[in-house]
Image 1 (tube, rainbow, N blue to C red):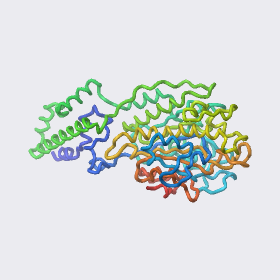
Image 2: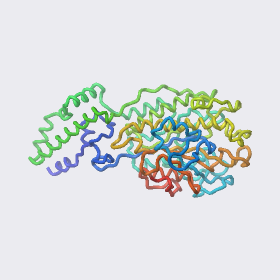
Image 3: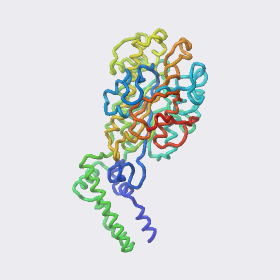
Amino acid sequence: MSNLKDKLAKIDRRTFLTGSLNTLVGLPVLDFMLNSSGTAFAQNVAIPKRFFMMTNGNALMNDKVNPKKVGKDYDLPHALKVLENYPHLRNKFSVVSNLGMNYRKATKVKYGPGLGPDRNAFHHESMVVQLTGRTARSAHNARSASADYLLRKYFKTSASHEHFSACVCLSAYGNNNGLDSRAAHQFNDNGGRERGEYNILNYYNKLTQKIKGADPKVEQARIKALKDKKSVLDFIEKRKLAYLNNLVSSNAKQKISDHLDHMRDIEKSIVSDMEKGQAQACEKIGKPKDYSRVDNVNDYSNEYERSLIFVDLMAMAIKCDLSRYGTLVITPTQNMINHDKIKKLYGVNTSANSREKDYHGNTHNTNVAKDLNHDIWLELSAVYRWHIDVMLRLADKLSKEKEGANSLLDNTVLFMPSEGGWGPMSFSSGNGTFNGPHSCDNMTQMYITGLKELKQGEHIRMATPRHASEAILTAMRAIGYKGNLGDITRSITEMEG
């Protein structure tokens, strides 16, 4: 008898709901589940925090991406002008500048620990170092897990949670049309390369299969019953309750009665939330269009349209708590996508270079590298806008979804590292005699969050250059991670809230 009493005493409201209201698997956080401040579940379990990276396989000259003003209310250089479309996110979007990595003789300053791309490598190896905190000796040898895998392991995320991993580009194009290494921006616990899913329909099916629910007709009937002020307890067979009552003492019967009354109060709260529109059940998005045909002739495969769909998939995965960590590769490193359509979508109609229209190839153009006002830099900046817009679109969706007293964005960090920075071109044309984006100097990273553990809406410029991986580690620790990132051990206090 005492064992039964103990079990009854341990039944909490959320557990009861997932058992008796199993048609609402994927139930969002409702007010009645929370403590009085709306910051944790009533059983003192913290609302989960999330971390997603969205990577950019290129770099850009500093005056197109770095504000001149430090702190809040910073100015918007060319690449950041897209923020004007999201005024409600200005106070969430931060820029971190004067970062870098130590890279051969070309690097003029020291960025913390001696970590950087090794030997003649740069492109993918630069991303490997940032995401793992380990010196990269090749694109295939990370030697450590990337940030998202470290977080999943540290927080012991349930196997039911999808590790979000996807790639917008269908190819690296040009001479690099394979995606195996260029788009592998994630590394598992053994340091092995993990390339994200690029087939939209495959990933849609994989994610939506995890959204469990009863037959839609039955679901509608039960929701109607709740709205009609009937109780979900009416669906429990009365004979089972009678049998249970016959097994326990009068005190236990009262406890059962009180507990069931409590459940009825919870149901009323559910109905109230429904009527007030305070919470929406987890819903599948509509089946997306299949953009899976690779066009290696024109070097463009509807990547803009694909990016919008992957934003929708990420938002669904976060809202339905299917995923808490992961990476969306917007462009792979050394990416030669034809950026003609994208630059026009983001306000640049110039034709600066008839020889090359690819995102990466123009960074090799020796003739214009010293001309910082050349239209090529505006074209590349427009493609940068696209990357930033993808992150802003996701942040916008999360900011509109209520979670407890706040929004999903207030419990999420979206972080964007880029392939390189701006400094001596170490091995390209010129051999270090002029500056360009084939460099690990003057790197810039961006993030969007509502977490109080990080500064929000600021341009944070390091007075002393800091290692790029330290910025990523700082964001990881903001959601509660206590470990290191490979060999990186220091956080950046200037980023902390």
